[in-house]
Image (cartoon, rainbow, N blue to C red; front, side):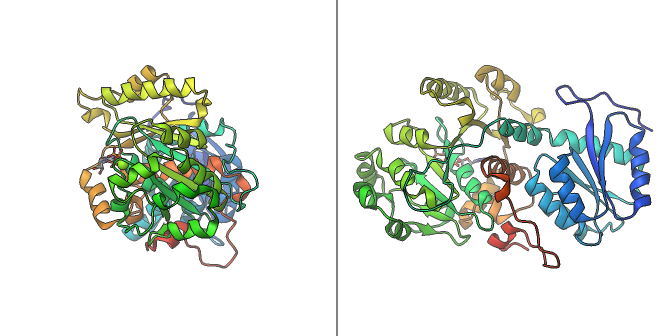
Length: 442
Ligand SMILES: Nc1ncnc2c1ncn2[C@@H]1O[C@H](COP(=O)(O)OP(=O)(O)OP(=O)(O)O)[C@@H](O)[C@H]1O
Ligand SMILES: [Mg+2]
């Protein structure tokens, strides 16, 4: 039997747990097992899926241990609702059904691990501690976002539309850091039922959202820039392209020589977004590396900036320069969310790359999100098919996908007021994930 373990440095001391099972004796048995360990604290118990969702929102436990089969709402549906609403909570499924189909469904719903009944004590302890540790980055992100006041929407007063219009600019001073990959997937991940998302290709140099999404641009931003005053919703709707996932896209210049037309009106792209913001919940902007007037106008306007760096020294140095510049521009610190892309696992890290700790020290900023380096074929095959990675596969257990979806979920939960969250499911109605509805994945 394993004895009580000292907690990891930086954690709050105790792992809080919500226990969910419809059979009272089963709950009591697990509760007794957990009571042996001083670093576990059962903060609540629930007998139905619906109760579990309510309690999860209220208690925000670190871990939920839940049965799969329950009356009123099954554990898989409950898990999906919980991981969407309370991303800092990690769900562990327990079931007598040990078959892979259940396992797959549970993982797709957002569960982080699986225990088969009857529960083995050591396995229970180890699983809770491993899942807790693995979820640390997520808890940190949510914690960071919770300290940030809800951002003021960016749309201009008196313009059309009643949506909040949060503008999220994705920027990196280093070419090839993954801005387009992150912007495209973030836009995709933010799409849920009732949420309108616009993706904007403002990379005038090497804009390649059309390639990422396999879109043909009949009309682009170039058609709008010299007549921004006359822009209205109807005209704008004619210019945006709709990806087959439902995502709206404002394309950049189709050819590099057209980019000059936009450069002649460097304030126009920001002005356009200010005008149409009220028609969207989120506008995600893919930018180019040069900090020219156009990009600065867009960064000024943005509610949040996802500043992307890789872990190489040149990239981190450039990022430091940009952070200093943002300070000079008096951007509030919490406007910028530092995101590291192509992060190697510590054990495989090469000398040429810096550890996350070193980067945080050097930049004197917390890292908001870490996105692992993956086999480039995963990204490329999605690109070849013209779909964002997370739209082609939503297996939340896969590194890149899990991290990109988390990024979208954390931003969504932080930027949208709680009452606008996913509505409570209606009793008796079959449950489908809003996202799976959009992307049609079964
Ligand atoms: N996490 C990742 N792991 C592995 N490869 C990645 C990852 N993120 C992006 N890539 C790859 O890195 C390359 C550059 O990505 P992307 O085009 O998104 O970067 P960018 O910052 O938009 O580049 P550019 O400066 O050309 O606009 C692409 O080939 C992409 O597949
Ligand atoms: Mg790009």
